[in-house]
Amino acid sequence: MLLARAPVRISFAGGGTDLEAYYARYGGMVVSAAIDKYFYVFVSPSAGDGVHISSSDYRSFYRWSREEEPVWDGDLRLPRAILHEFGVRDGLSAFLASEIPPGTGLGSSSTVAVALIKALATLSGQRLEPTQIAELAARIEIDKLGSPIGKQDQYAASFGGVNAIYFEKDGVRLEPLRLDLEVRADLERRLLLFFTGSSRSANDILREQRDATAGGSTGVLDALHEIKRAAVECRAVLERGDLTRFGEILDEGWHYKKRLAGSISNPRIEELYQRARRAGAAGGKITGAGSGGFLLLYCEPTYQPALCAEMEAQGLYRMDFRFDSGGAKVLMNSSPHAVGSQPVAV
Picture (cartoon, rainbow, N blue to C red):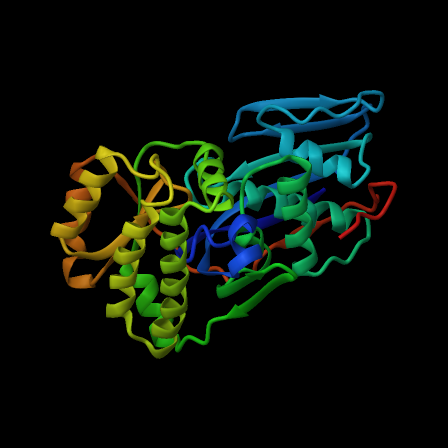
């Protein structure tokens, strides 16, 4: 058996500029942090025919026989596409499990891809670097499956850490932030995640944003330019330890983000955010594409008891977390068997 994991992420600034429709013309930038909530992949040789995939999160099971042609649909289409990419069509069982629900804005879909690629590359004897894993995950999701997503999640899951990630037409560059240890610890203490109790598919929101960007919508492009500017400032204030300004940037970024698509926010989210601000939060945002998932808030420790009480009174649940520095990794490998019939193109 082989056990691999990859972390999900929280994005601070720049989300949306990692879509090709934007960065291919203007260049994009995201500041984000991987956190210690993980997606796990257990893979082991199977004595039966075909490939068996099960997921605790989707409560789904899929059996793919050697004779079948792959079909990319349903909840498990992403792991099926990855297994196909590695040429795995027989003798393997895979079990997928996550510490957070799917569709909650923490990049879980891309984390699935990164963790499974890390596992299969290890089993097939391929030593893929973090950049290669991230690019392969992005290619499968965007090109093979046609998902209207960007590239920030794959890089965050593959590398881990707190990073500035730059997106250009000819490639991606990741630079770890130079954070003082005390600043890093203070940032962890002042960031709070609250689950809103709802999950959603980001594809419709991202598709609307992508199409508006590609079509040259002035309102969307202006918002994305401001979001990228905020990401540049976000890196600068974190590296100089100005966390007060960081909280303000989160608030400003949230208002720009809502201009990208009509469904990013809703009356419930607006009410929660305003209540959080009145209770002491300096800034925040809905994680991911929007419309549901986790509410990320920046709050000084003095105001956190009142903020937590207010959010809990509204039915939200706080999820504690720390930053992750390890990225995708294999935790256990006791399998002597290799899988796959061909090396993957990365």
